[in-house]
Structure formats: C-alpha cells, structure tokens
Image (cartoon, rainbow, N blue to C red; front, side):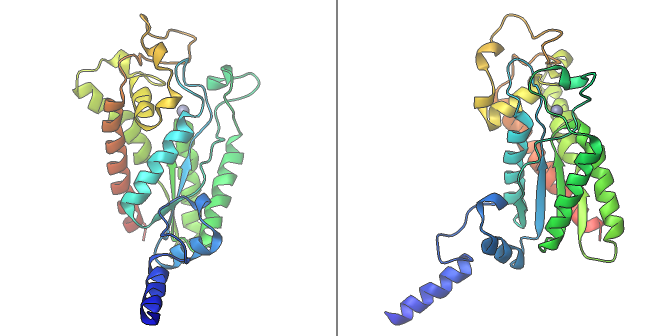
Length: 268
Ligand SMILES: [Zn+2]
C-alpha cells in the first residue's frame, strides 16, 4: 500500500507540476507561477503573443472579433506545436487617428493607441517572456495595421539578442493565410470578388461563425441587400457559414504552425 502511494506520488509529479489534476491549458493566465515555471523548465519554451484589436466590424459582427479569433486560433496553434504557451491577448492596437477620426475610428466603439505605444508594449512583453526563460517569442497579429510594427520590434530584438539563444518571430503568414490565403480558397470554390471584400465580408464573417458564433448577428445576414457604403463592411457577408469558416481555420493553423517551425529553425 505504501509502495503504491509512493508510485502514485511520483507519477503525479511527472504528469503535473503540482499534486492536483493534470493541467490541460496553454493559457498563461490559467496557470500559477510555479506551474508556469515548471512548464518552461520541461520544454514549453515558445510564448505566443496573440495580437487582436478592438474595432468596428460592420453592423453584423461584434467589436471583439479580432481578440476572440486570435485567442482561439493561438490555442489551436500552441496545441499543435506542443511546446508553446499563449500570453494574454493584446486588444489595444493602432486603428487610426482620433482627431480627425480616420479609418475604423469613424465608427462607434473602435479603440486606438499610437504606433510607438504599441511597439513599446510589444517590446516589453517580449522582454518579459525572455526574462522568464522562453526561447522563442512569437507575434501573431490578426489585424492588418499591426504587421509592420511586429516585424520592426522582432528585428530590433533579434539584433540585440544575436549573441543569445532567444529569438523573436513576427509570423506574417498567420495574417496572409487569414486574408489572401482564405480568399483564394473561397475564390476557387466559386465565391465572387464582391463577396470576398476587404473587411467584415464573407471570409471574416465565416471565420467568426466557425470560432465564436455569438459574435455574429445572423439575422442581419439574411437581409435582401448587402451592407452598403457607411456600414463599416467592405464586401458581402451574406453567404458566410461556419462550415466555410472551418476551412479557413484549418488553413490558418496549418500554415502558421509551418511558418513558426521554419522561423524558429532559420533564425538560429
Ligand atoms: Zn482589423
């Protein structure tokens, strides 16, 4: 009996860093600091920073689209990689100017921050991950305007960290797969250019339906007419479906995982 108790005790230490239930989360926010430290020590040395944005998404989709999407996709990407954890979503990003309001700032609810504030935030977040033992810091940006800043910050950190084993990675393929890549897939299935659009159109809406349908006002998708000028949507979302969205999700996860693996190898 005593022997079994000892064996069980050893097994539980091997399975989990605590004596509780085995942990089944990749989210940093759901771990205690000793659990996090043990996971890093046992090989979870990639930290994904999901970068969203709080912005208007037409009359039919909620302002948190980017944040919800990048969190859920980051989880799938981290689980597929097997050695990654996911930091809290960065939900405040550059969206345009306040005075006069430009871009999405013309619509209620959009929140912007200056570009330099965004870059300094990313930089400090990446430095924090390095301090705690992560070897690869990955930026995944769901919104277009954050891509350049992510690349600049990663390049600057990699110059500074050249003599160390730590690297930062701005994975543009995530954004390319979610936009041009998914549009090409839909186009090959016969969806028209005016449906594919640029913002809050069919691809954007399908991805959100697949990941968190509570963010989509499906009643509005049954309108006779597509959302027009001044609606905030660019393109026609009415034939969006969760089924189509799942094709996009699979594409984004597969291409992003491949790009992270390539970058973490090539940058050393
Ligand atoms: Zn956006």
